[in-house]
Length: 112
Image 1 (cartoon, rainbow, N blue to C red):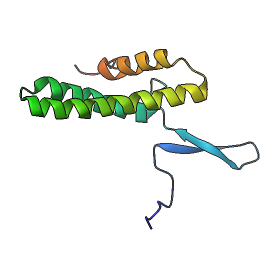
Image 2: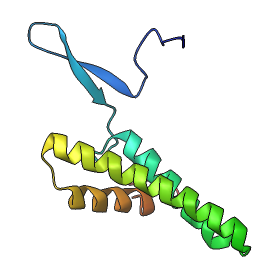
Image 3: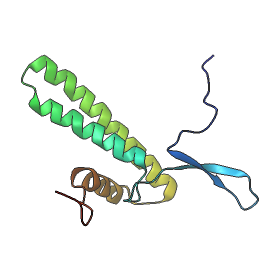
Image 4: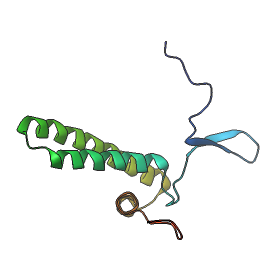
């Protein structure tokens, strides 16, 4: 039997209902408003795609293409499920996610 963690993962927080009972899990949010998990999933997919573009060997490219596709499917599945649950526009969420990961904004006053 697998050992269960004693507490929820740090990236989730328990929502409290007015009566003080635990209502549901809320994912930790990135400053963009997207769940941190989505940022991580998109970064993984982008890294897999970058690795694919660096390869020349046919066999290695075939394997890496599968890795990239699985990572991309994981992102899209997570975003789709979240958007349906929250009644949000999935396309807008995907666009915001890609923009957030691929073109992060430099905070004012940060060194370049």
